[in-house]
Image (tube, rainbow, N blue to C red):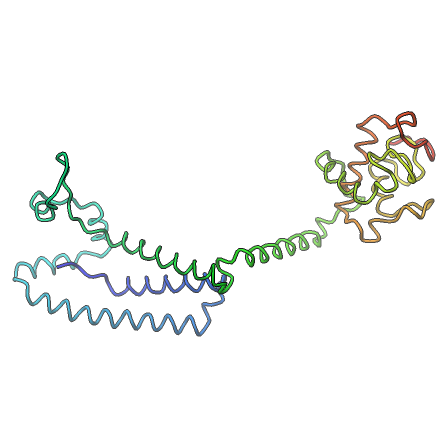
Length: 294
């Protein structure tokens, strides 16, 4: 006669399964105070109590049919804590007599098969997996709730990322201004893409100059700052007082401080780390005064 699973274990299993099911549907812990979850949990506990009560009657009925020695052995084993019994059963080895009783009458090449029962924990995990798969398929193809819906999950994650970016950029510590902007070669690639999107129409590809001045030589119309990088940042942010066509990308809200830092990094790169595009190579003629940067 096999030992039964304690009532508290059955209740914990029921509550755990309900928790997983509701969490899959709701996707947050707000359901814990929901009357639907509480009602379902109470109903599950009542079912576990009823099942345990029926099991007690069946146990007593079977126990009455055992001999005194079998009853004593069963009651002695019942006193052993549940998890201790589980641990022992996981590593239990049958005796030769026990193996003879569960030996299946077929074999091959001297290899015999025993009719062992699968462990309860394995069966439990198996059926939980089966139920989970069925629920997942229903949610995936039925479009019920947000669980297993890739489009909704993507939309939620996308909105979450946008909110995180907005919060990051709104933090005064993360706002890039001309005072804390610095040159980094890591920003050149991003700055080049921004330059192509906003500046190429006037300064042409590579900053060689067209309607706008040549950005690869050492002549600058506007020199409000003492260093080249800060000067570029200033002009992109505030525009040019000498040329209204050069808009204030920062003040107008077209580019953020981080964007301006990236553009300034790219212009600094083509001016200081690349050879200038002179007139004989297709560059525009110098405009402004020769600069002497610090």
